[in-house]
Image 1 (cartoon, one colour):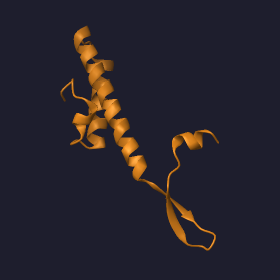
Image 2 (cartoon, one colour):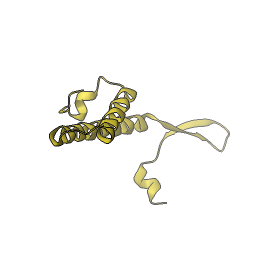
Image 3 (cartoon, rainbow, N blue to C red):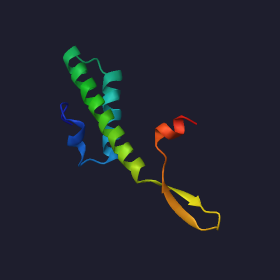
Image 4 (cartoon, one colour):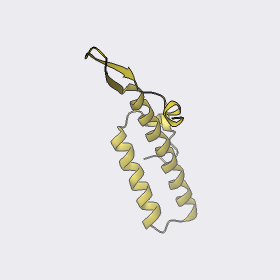
Amino acid sequence: MTPNKKPDQHKSESFEQLLEQLEAAVVRLENEELPLDEAISQYQAAMTLVTACRNRLDEAEKTVNLLVQKNNGDWTTEPLPDRDETDDK
């Protein structure tokens, strides 16, 4: 992985690939004695991956619908409520 990639430059990679790269970066930061410059670069790369993963999850959440049963017994789908709406309840 290129440490200076921006979140939108990860579009060709699956969420699972991004998460795997993020986990590997965390392991390197936790287990290896890296020089400061390399540790900072690794941290920046990890944070870019976090943003890319979060963006991917937000996109996926927007496509998920809530299955709702109407009073007449029929089923329909509705968009999930925004997080802000559910946090206020």
